[in-house]
Image: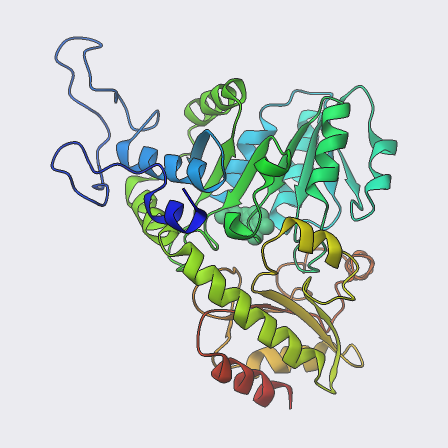
Length: 379
Ligand SMILES: *Cc1c(COP(=O)(O)O)cnc(C)c1O
């Protein structure tokens, strides 16, 4: 089945009760048993729920995996991966990282005796120096937030296999429409389904997808034991969102490209961060591992003026000033005062997050309206 068919049919069967084409929202805690243990595959909805299971098999299908697991948020999904580890284990993570992932690693898991190294993986040669006998997990985010750096997943998987490490890829920004990490050698794909998979800014959810049965069993054990599951109604919403993922992504990519090119030619703009440009430092890797370049674009203005950036995001009318990304509507954010405000200025600048940096999640509105909006806000 081709990807554009999988988004609609992958892992899906008409409901067994009445043939409903969309899975019913099984808003139930528990399931009647005829005799103790005599049930139809469902006992209690923390362990399994038919609507959630329908979503989980859609997840697996989209990412070319065998098993999908849905969680109450993207961070709950990452949390489940970290629970595969034990005190003393070490993790190598990309140094550019979603802020919430960084906080989970350093403020929660560090105190349980897990050690994290944040490595610039854009240069694959940097990784091996950090590997020792305690290293268990390679955590990769690509494209990165908000700098749009690209990490070579296949090259990471070669290193992971050589040293017997798990390779997990946060595929939130790219979505399986653009890149499929399991097919590039990753062991675990993670999603904040809150973003493009849900696609309509109406639900918070996370997902994990794997190929290996043993790994799936371990993660299922954690999902059921820790209980960070999502509800049936949210499962339904994300399943519905997924059905249009391919058409939404196609338009996100077209609009993202047009916005990136408009900004790159604007006299007030210093730099545009978008992996589709030939002079993007990881453009060739992006071209190899991604189908297109996505709808996320960051840019900085000349003079690197904090107040000017704030003025621009305040003046935008169609782009809504808000956290999050990946919905049908265009959003703008100012990382230095929003997502990365807790990172000291010096650290921020080391990551390239200038005071004037603005991050756009380019939506699927008419492109001429989006360009006109940017034009009036910047001028
Ligand atoms: C939003 C996001 C997360 C966290 O997901 P939540 O659903 O908000 O918990 C993780 N990684 C990336 C890249 C994200 O954008």
